[in-house]
Length: 102
Image 1 (tube, rainbow, N blue to C red):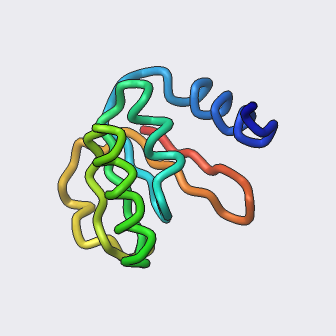
Image 2 (cartoon, rainbow, N blue to C red; image 1 turned 30 degrees about the vertical axis):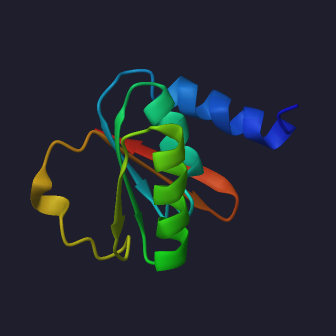
């Protein structure tokens, strides 16, 4: 059975991210939100500054056969924001999900 909190996150992701587009998960940790977005057909880049968290996220992606780009970086000082094509970002701060789309 899926925990109730997980269902709330899935509902919020579905409500705000129904249009398929490149997405950015800031502070992705082991990839929970990145996997939710990828499951809905989005091209996802996850960023975290903790190498161990990224290693676990990459391991999970490989085990699930999911294509998600995971990068080590500080979400407040991203070296690749000039990439362009970013249509939305999502992050968890203090237990809340924060979304931004353009």
